Image 1 (spheres, one colour):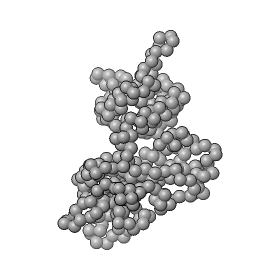
Image 2 (cartoon, helix red, strand yellow):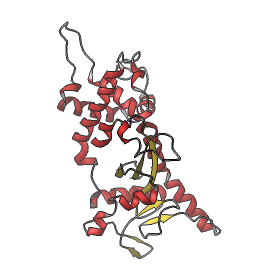
Image 3 (tube, rainbow, N blue to C red):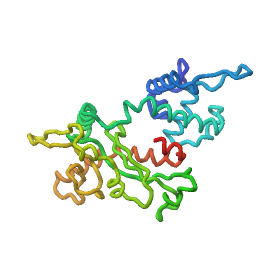
Image 4 (cartoon, rainbow, N blue to C red):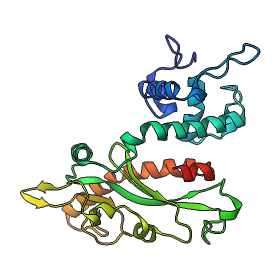
Length: 282
């Protein structure tokens, strides 16, 4: 508490953002929302009149495990929290966040969301009409149940892995994710099973049209790498650019795709600690 939440704190906002991967204001808002709705995160007194862990301690343990991949037994000295308690904090924290914020964040983009995605992306990367970046990765699943190891182990990976497909916007909002199909998968196999374009096929997708230099385009597009098929909704970099304009576009496209690469690095670092219950909850 003295390090970050006392007045004045020992470490400032810059250190807090670096170690918690979020601002102090956002962290305290999450803690307040969870504490108000879940009794587990409220501070209680035991039979000997001793104070239990505070909501900030429990949320700090969960966020440390999620943000930087620290193991649950790494807080026995700093937070005085046992391994089992840290794991329980993580599970309850994930359930609480999903239940509280699912209506706001765990949904497909609406027409308003699309505008809020396209405008900042154009301002930052100078690519009008972009809905984000699409990519897949293998995430090591350390706590895979023994009954599922055969389905989620590939020949080129000696440990069980989960293939995750994700779309992330420039502010790292993951507005689409799909994972779980067993077997030997690559980006194409996962895309064919993914519900990414179900709304487009059903005719219920929100309007994502845009205009560039007077030319009208019916749908927005996603930035992808070279393995994906040549669809009108995918924009890939030139494999062998020769013209200066092609070289510039390749540089801009690859810079914009750093957003999804940051997301996938986070998933790879933390996915190995997921339990079967946590995976199926998501």
